Image (cartoon, rainbow, N blue to C red):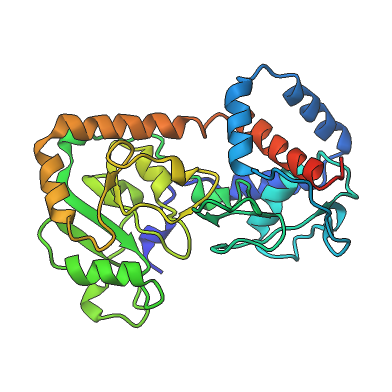
Length: 320
């Protein structure tokens, strides 16, 4: 194993996450109820809260949930990845344990046939059956805590490190074009049946932060590095997103929150050279991205929105 895989700088503390969730799993209902009551009484910007709740859960019609759906009390760590279970139970524990839910764990890229909780969904007009929750946040909601370098001090290159395999055609297409380009330091961190010279040494987040431009390429669904890029002093470069999560990727504005490149990547060099010469414009994109990220860093707000999204689901399925 490469020693860089053990670097936890700028990453969430997994040990603390698991310890906290196991304790929460077996904590008495009294403490859960107390926290819920405190949240409900908190003073929030209702217009902002309502907007986000509607974004994540845009069910407009009532739906009769089938009896085959899963009961909250039967949600088990055996159902799938522990991170999804922990993130789900963090909020469902505040509701009647006999209520029914539908959900799909993992990288969801299609719309469920019935209203279901998911981590990710396609960006399209009719995705109301996909109800977003902040799942697998230990991996996806990572933010840079302290970027020591100013944007102007960073390298005038684009960096990318990630898994590249035949099924990820967008990544294959990009590496084919730019593996040897002087403006790029890009490559795959493992072999995955690709040309040997595409495989490069792994880089930590701290090492990637030495570059002005960081490529954010969607994988199975969203690009997991987008959140930490947008919280740093570097700038994300990416195509228009096709999928979204709790991060509301569809609301990101091209060349305002990130640098937009064409779907075939043909304008990458043009965009990099343009912004390299216009550091003030690039700095403004960096500031806009940082401001966007901040809304996801208020724990109390995130908790309340999550509760309201789930509560609305139970209301729209005629259970509350």
